[in-house]
Length: 381
Image (tube, rainbow, N blue to C red; front, side, top):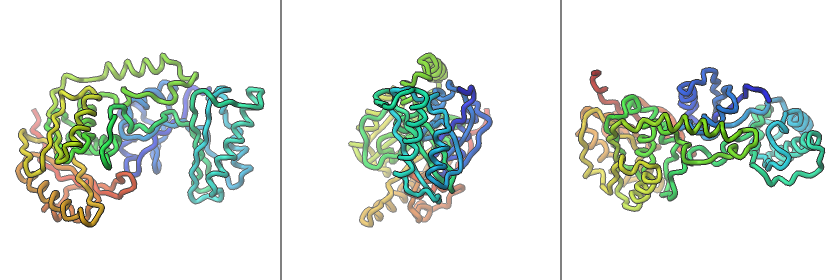
């Protein structure tokens, strides 16, 4: 087992730079950013730390190997040469997932089968057995073929990192927690989290809850488990040390002014239940309220929101009306900043002002703009 490992933090499209910044803030300086992922080096302990701390990444993978593969023979031999037995015990479960893009080996099921067969052959040699029951810890392997290069990885995370563990109920079309965290980290509010924060279209409360977790430096993975916690190679002490560090890092002495509202009372019920589950019920105020009745106090606050998209023609008129209402709310708040993620092309027209900044992001598979209307920064004390 090499002491330094090549690790990969996967990133939703458009958020690679945000994931890289997170890693640098955690102390990992040797990051290499590519489409959909950020590669960096670390130890076994860093697998635990990164799973607990990364807010905008989807998964933490171990890079097992990378090699050219234009034939099934090359794929088989390249896979078999890798040290699978260092990680997977004789009773480990090791399903293989796959993807292929712009590669001669375009049949994903065939590639998965070849990789599985190669790993079995390697483990037969090391464990001197012909049969693997696969009834132990789970080791999800992915073969990713791009331009005839095969990348083999081992997933340390399990269910994706947006599943924080605080949400038991789900509303229609929720914003993923990883995307919500990214929107906050890309805003100015993150620099001074004692400022007011408001989401007038809060749905199930993801943005206010993620904001409170960022403000108090609560590790997003603190309330959940990960596949690699069951791996013998990662002793329980490493996970305990990482969790102890995370608990010690919480800054719950910062006073919060975080709130959200939505016109849908069922969504507010879900939001309140999630905030309670996250241990933040007393810190976040939710209420059922149309945008026209929202009245905000305080200076230099931030509105960050994910307004409805109006995907059906019948809804488009209502969405445009809502955007106009958000524009009028913003006019009443001369020192506030406003941030919205939206696929609506005429948002700025209906909002009645041009964005100061815009950034292309994908909310799931929907191409969106993250529009930023910047108010003045608070005076320095």
